[in-house]
Length: 248
Image 1 (cartoon, rainbow, N blue to C red):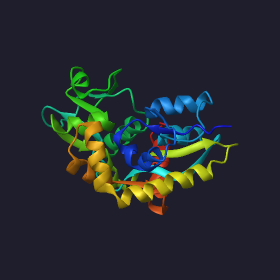
Image 2: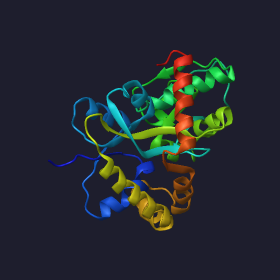
Image 3: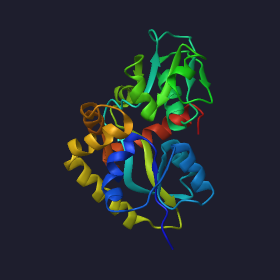
């Protein structure tokens, strides 16, 4: 039976899957939210899913080494504004997120901020900012919004400041009864190759995402794709905070 492999349809998954694509491996591309829905419908066998979804469903999911985590600043999960971040003003949140919206709620509580978080059925910063003075944007939209608006909060950086650990935004999973260790090994080999050839991959990605190769090379280096000891502790702390604030 053919194994159905998925990936986030964002620049953050370009490097991990680049070598696989070059070798002819077929990969299903979807938003993080849609990949989670595909697991629910058993339409996919191996893919990264939002960390919050994994934590809610880990009794039926198996996790792997491949993840999407920020070492410090993440660059692509940000709150933007046309002005400065002010307490008590609402933050419109893209409909593409489950992990980031809950991370934002934790950060606001930890910082003692009273901003209302308003989920909106949009992904573009320009549309979100019509609803509130601030907007949480993720993925490629966030990378582009950085040059158009003021970045008032980088959620990866905020998490590192609060906890001292990386923030795991996505984690590779399969259903519990399916062992996808061999697929994970193949992805990790692709990641190793990608990290050794970042400049070449950034040049390829520049055309696809309409961002400079210099910026993309920096962006790829801000991310880590291995669920190591530090990343596992960061994920545990995220789970603890989600329980503390009644999000899980």
